[in-house]
Length: 534
Image 1: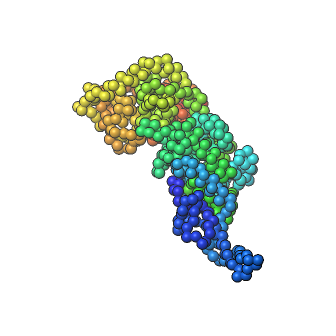
Image 2: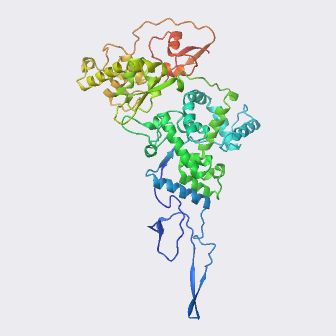
Image 3: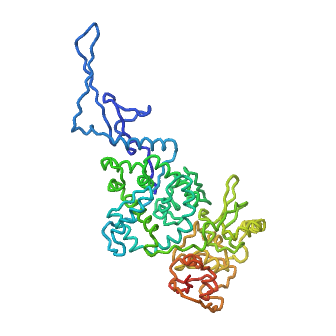
């Protein structure tokens, strides 16, 4: 995550040489008062003594270098290596008018020994040595890294399995973009530490997306941020921006471990940590002088790298997601259209469209002259959309025109109902329940995002005013028998049929409905679903 890089010379640790006889110093012809410099200053004293004798009518002047008091606070010298880093980074800052850098807090790590007999220390050492041989990162064994790895394996197995499955969608696109900029492919694991592979992840300080760019940094790297679009959440564009930024950092530090640390806390903090560590340049030797969140940043990255590389050995399974990246394609939009209009026209679940198009903040794809906004669709839907795009756009235009007029009859006040959000609810689910669109619910309730809170009240104008949200309108369907081994899946908060189907390779939404006698898409946390084991 990026921190705000202020142009204060002392904060940047710029070392300056100046003559003591002057009252002020000059940096590139810009006067700076001595009091501004709050960090290390190298002072060179020069004393001039004039001899009283005259030889051949020439005044002899003897220049004597004054001895420096070794106890003086002014006898401080900067680290030459770090000084060069500062100069290089200052050049980068000076040429780019934006100074946001990545800031993201990593969950505080406890480096105490972890009892995990399934992974012997000798085995871990051997594997880390193998990993170190094939990556430019410094993956050598140390007790702190062992503690983090074993803690993750012991306490975060469910989360890791979900990330492994999700990574099958994202990692192929990451690797392609990283390879274009000669970035080590292992950097893909950084997105796990940054955002847990959530394109719309947003930190408490506003950093957004898979790679957690601040607003200014995103703009600097060409990521469009507007009322409709936030390209920091675009998986491809944000990965390209992250690759460019990391390439700059590596050019300055010449070390990938330090480049990652700078990505998290900023180059200035890494430079100060090197100074305070006596000039050491190994991450593990300067870690204790880095900000607290950055001290745990690289261990978390390396721990995830190890676990993903040795997932099979630790009993994890790499499932193929229901929708792979190469099974999708993009279509450039020719006029404004909403994701729920696309969903209605193509039969694609709104949740799937939101997953594939996370950069559209309001689920609306705008059409702006000079911009190329695209809609990502499953490959088997692209043909249907393109072959019928005139009709689809006409349908969308008619819908937008209708919204400019008074609310239609089904939306009259006497048909209004209030819905209270329950655990497991989401906008797509509620919209189908009442036969309305997600965008309608957002408009009626002034919602700027898809986030809901349990207990929140929503105003709905249902197409079928007599609908009862608490009762089922259809008779229960007889479940389809499952041949073979059955997995019992307990529905959790936030689960949907689509998200559950993603967890089981080869299983579709319709399969889950058939096996469990489900007619709609309503799920309740705690209910048990039967899934055929693949």
